[in-house]
Image (cartoon, rainbow, N blue to C red; front, side, top):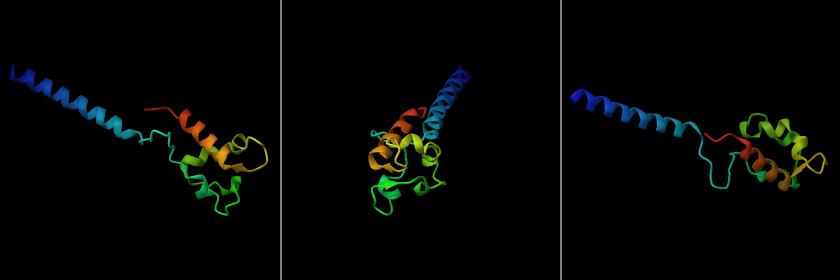
Length: 100
């Protein structure tokens, strides 16, 4: 009987540890759907109200998709992404990411 209690205790601890491991695997997102992408003002360094593809850093993981699909984010096709287009694209991209 003492072995069965030990096995049950071990199984309980193992299942709890697995849940904690999965919970730590995904970065937390705020209720607003924060994707971890920099704010528009961080990218619009010259304060012109729009960014060009060259303004999007290559080394920021959260912006790689924007860089690859810049023309899709530029909904009015003027070669620039304004704050509204940026926010819409980032919010759309963050809702497409699978939840863990």
